[in-house]
Length: 391
Image 1 (cartoon, rainbow, N blue to C red):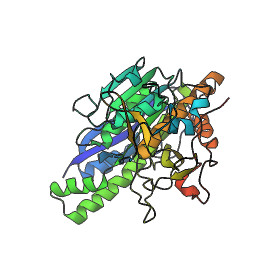
Image 2 (spheres, helix red, strand yellow):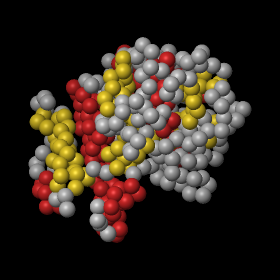
Image 3 (cartoon, rainbow, N blue to C red):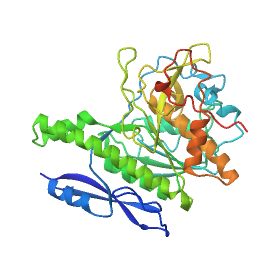
Image 4 (cartoon, rainbow, N blue to C red):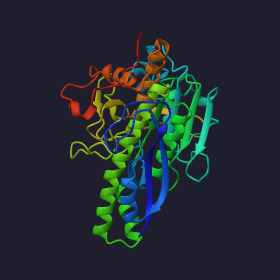
């Protein structure tokens, strides 16, 4: 039986480079190429053996990392006239605004008419085949946190100086697929994105169910899904390597992704989900703030093992149709990290040293645990709360 596969290849070098890595790994200085094909098991093995092949993985369902309901109002989520998350990461006191940096958001789309995005050049592309509109509100909310302008006198954006953004709608009413995510990342890189924010994950149960509907026995379907899960992690890792290799051609793009909301502390904790778990991605955990104070704790739903953490509980941002809404989730923490990454990118750009490795070092190296409640588990928050540059 044939199924849809993603074949990732290293194209011919875009500039001469003597660097060659081990068999099957990306070659430095090469741009990625993709092919989506219906393959049999025999054809998959043949594709893997081809010299240009970097990774082969089946197309798997991707789903939105759904936000959790908040119990507070939009007014209560603001600290004075600033969303608490913007204040917590130090963006309100940073001399940088993200000016000159291009951000990409791969999500459910955006409400382009919202006042939070006035004055921003929004380059939109729909990968879903559904309406261009953001029918969920998730993408609009996440985008508002990254670079939204003030709404009704309240600051919601970490990097409100961003003037150009790439908005890829990769999730529709029925979710999406890993093939669309890969294509969207490539699109964002080719169009100059410096920071790419994603709040989505592999839908493993959905993949198993889809295979069973196709006629596979449950045991066989589970085995196929597990292999698909594993090979897609490898696919995203190899893609991240190819994206990083574009640094030498002044194409710096940092991949930031949500860790997931499946944990239920104190009962149990779940590890970071794909694609965030893949090497080359900055995985993000969610933090909440203790009421009437500035001390933070890890959110009870936040998956463990992330590289960084950001405000993810009772986050105030834009909602479709105008106005503001409050949401919680690692999805809300991720755009805080993406926004701070844009601030650091602006600083490095001004210094002539904007490279993905340096940007990652600054972002991770300046994270802080000072606001954390005593007794926190470092594995839950990685390097700590992401912090904006202050000078």
